[in-house]
Figure 1 (cartoon, protein in one colour):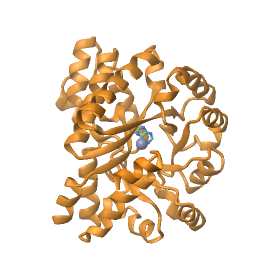
Figure 2: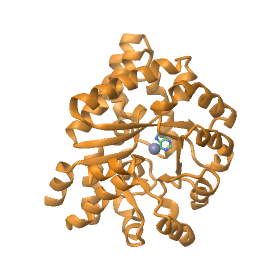
Figure 3: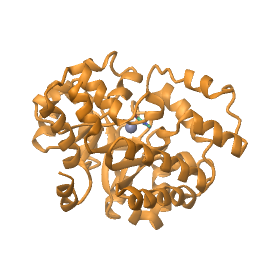
Length: 328
Ligand code: HPA
Ligand code: ZN
C-alpha cells in the first residue's frame, strides 16, 4: 500500500498515450449531441461503456475509431486535450509525450489546422497554468498504405516545429514496420525522432525491423521481445526504452492477468522499461492505475523498483538532455 501511495504521489512522465484514447464516453455523448453525430447502436454513456469489453486489438480499434467521429471542430480537439492535461495535473504527470492519429481525422475531411490548432492551444494553457511539458508524436495508421502516410507527413510540414516524432500504430499483425521505411526516412529528413508500436500482438521480429529499418529510438509496447533472447540483449545493450502499458495488455487479451507480463524478466535483463496508459478512457485507468496494477501484480513493495520505473521514463523521454536532468 505504501508503494502504491508513493507511485501515485510521485512526479511522473507519460510516454505512451493516444489522445483519441483519452476520449471518455461522457465527452463522446456531449460532442455527439453538439455535432449531430449518430452513435447507433449506442444510446447512452452506460451502453457505450458496456461495449468496452475487447477480445483483441482489432475489437478495440473498431470502437476507438467509432468514438473519434464525434471530434469535429477546433474546440472539440481543444476540449479533448484540455481534459487529458487536467488529468495529468491531477495524477502528477509533469511531462507527457502524446500520440495523435491525423489520418483518423483527415479521412473525415477535418483539416490538419483544426486538430493541431485545438491541441496546441490546450498544450500552451497547460504549460503556463501548471508548468507541465508536452511533446506531440504523430502516428501513421499501419493498416493504410505507406502512400497515405507520406501524404500525411506532407500535410504536417507547416506544423513540424510543433511535432517531436513520428510513430506507427493501429492493427499490428500483417502490417510489419518494413512497409513504412520510406515515410520514416522522410520524417528523419525533417528532423523528427522515430518511435513505433512493435511487439504488442506482433512478433519480436517486428521490434528488430523497427530498430533496423525505421531507426526507432524507442519501442512502444515491445513485450514480445522476451520471445527472442537476441532481441532482448540488443534492447538492453543499446538501452532502447520500451513503453509498456499493463492495463491495455490486460484489456486487449495480450495477457490473461497483469502478473503474466514479463516485467521481471525485462527488468532483470536491464531493459529500460516504463509504465504507461495507452488508451485510458477505454482500458479502465490512467497512469496511476497502471502503476497500481503492476505494484499489486508483482508485489513491488520495494520502492527502489518503482523509482527505477519512474527514472527510466525520464531517461526514455525525447526531451533534450538538460531538460531531462531538471526532471531527475
Ligand atoms: N496499439 C495499436 N494501435 C493503437 C493502440 C495500441 O495499443 N492504441 C491506439 N491505437
Ligand atoms: Zn498505443
